[in-house]
Image (tube, rainbow, N blue to C red; front, side, top):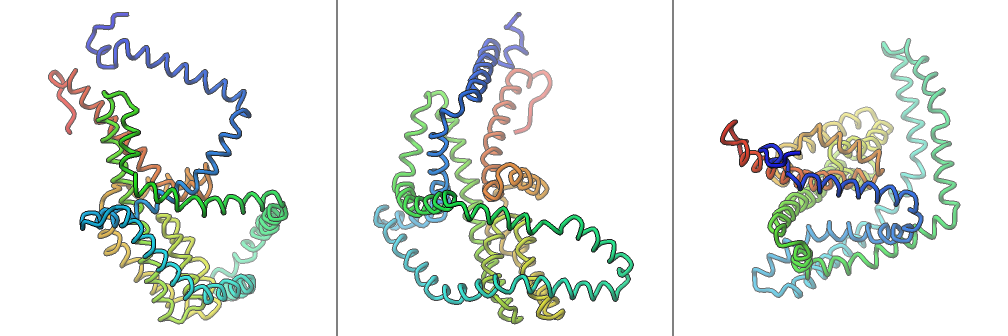
Length: 381
């Protein structure tokens, strides 16, 4: 086959065949791995053990690194800056926990104990309202369907979690993983803050010199995208939690601080998080009084308005540049593949893939312009 034509040069010439052979070798390697995967079980255990504290450390790194860098610009040595930030945040968190822990503990215990009664009361109120409305003819059909299809749902869930909790090995494994995360997370964070640039430069130097500029650019873009997203999302979540807490206190909603914390934590997940977060608040408000439900709707409308028009645009900006429909699809796919961890890490993971894809496509456009731009017109940059 002639390899000197313009098209063959454009797609890589002999390099294309070498690339195909490389992909075939990768496929053979994967096939062999599928036959002897048990050999790598210890490696998988090690990776799964290291992964959680590493992820937490990177999240904290993106939150704290700008502050440490600012102190460094103010002529505070980086090591002392890290120590100052660590002591300051540790003291602040300790104070907040000591002040709020008794209230939160009391509310959580009370909520867990009374939540089944709240569900029952809400069901009775909804039933009464439906039977006195135009939906009354359809109530029996809907109730029969729900009884047939959902009657054993809670028993299945309880049985699943009950069996898991009764398993001593599962409990010990979960406890061990938690202890490892708590112990290793601060050390990983410290070295990331102290030597983050060195790790990056050392990793790039492992690559052939020809690819180092590309790798540097990709890592820089990833750092900007993921860092901006994590910083913005955490700040937005804190603002939403604080605003909802103030709103819940004003309207007199029970379990205000607990519901606000739940909403703040879940708001880290775009679009789907707030929908899940408002569910327990709706149940409690409906049990208190129908008018409380109206006040809750007003509070949520105000908070969502402030978040959508003032908080997110000013904090998040346009860094991600991802369409809302894309975000929803990514969350659904990641949730089905990896569960709750996938939902939490879906958007940062998508941002990383997007950076790589955009960079590769820009290289493709440059290559196309070099071979075909003069004759057919080039891609716009």
